[in-house]
Image (cartoon, rainbow, N blue to C red; front, side, top):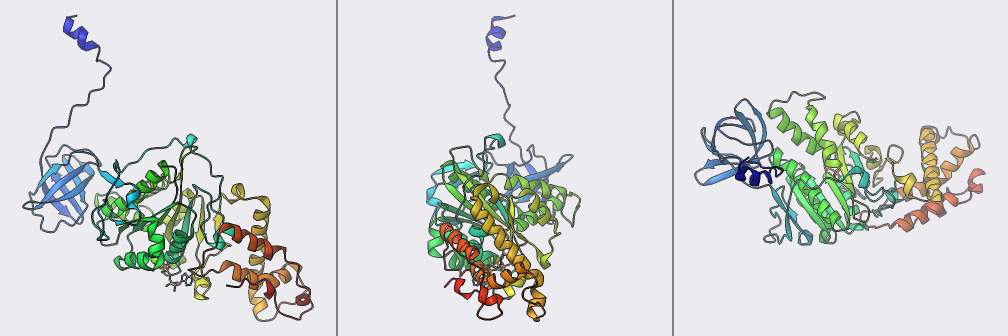
Length: 462
Ligand SMILES: Nc1ncnc2c1ncn2[C@@H]1O[C@H](COP(=O)(O)OP(=O)(O)OP(=O)(O)O)[C@@H](O)[C@H]1O
Ligand SMILES: [Mg+2]
């Protein structure tokens, strides 16, 4: 062995990755949203720059390949693109801005400000991918997070690090409820991802639902429906990444994503465009692999660190609970809050259907008395609903079933408990006290004798 080989042998264990040669390719085809290019040596997930006009470049991500062809999905519009356009790999990973200065700001899927308040003063640029937490090192869910909404605090208590779905059709009060949680929660920071909604709604949500008070401790990442599907995916990932950053700083973060369905639809557009076959209701299989990947990033950090408690809205059009995205979301989330069109039509807001909703963490995080009261309230409500038609037509005879009698007496108080004005915060402590007051009230004897008012004295004064 020569002296040189001997000396070099010391470095035999040092991994050596040859830098990828810089290549240049050409666009050969544009089908729908996807660009096809040849002559590039790039990897899946890499970013490229496509020359759409002289001196003007658009970013595009490598989303697939076949033979020598590379499929690219642009982040922005590629108006003006011509055949044979130059494509060059972009060096460096995708970095996104994070930091306390993001509070009060509205940004797009790649971290550019949308609010006209000048450039972002990011404290740090980090990779979009985030860090993977070993599931065994994650702190378990054991402490409640006050979300400031009575029906949730009282009956569907949410734990720090819990991930829930907010299942609802259109126009039944999702945005208002998310806005209430942002303004009333005890979480130090809220990150709101507005994915694939109408552009007009983004402004409405910021001005009306959040207001200046909610905005001050929030970061909003918005990507409306007319953004490219890749941009919408990026916005969901960026909001999660920003929440992860604050969690790493030891903060309790509330992450609100509206909506997970639009995130799934963006992934569907991309997957179909690169030729993945559709499976369940037009959704290719990769969609159902992407959902848990996103959702798993929320939750608790390692013991001693912060937490990300997350709500993902899931659209159930025509109240179709069999929607594949809704099905998949139900399986990967730790509970769901269902909003009911029936209740909304009666003017019962927030229109939370307490029979269909469940918080899987609640039994482990609240004390036994609270849990028992919540169960009793749910039972009374369900009992009333079962007999509602009979009661309404006067066909129910008092005295035939003591539980139904009690449910009838409690009903006005239960309705008042479950409803809440959009500007009325309700801390956890008071939510529990009021619940206890209703459930501990003695049976109304006058009522049982068939006279007097229903349990009106329990009605909470707004
Ligand atoms: N807590 C509340 N108190 C009073 N009214 C409410 C409350 N929550 C919702 N509403 C009413 O319901 C309407 C629709 O609510 P919202 O915009 O939140 O629905 P959405 O589910 O987000 O709709 P979309 O599907 O269009 O996004 C509001 O304009 C408001 O009038
Ligand atoms: Mg809305």
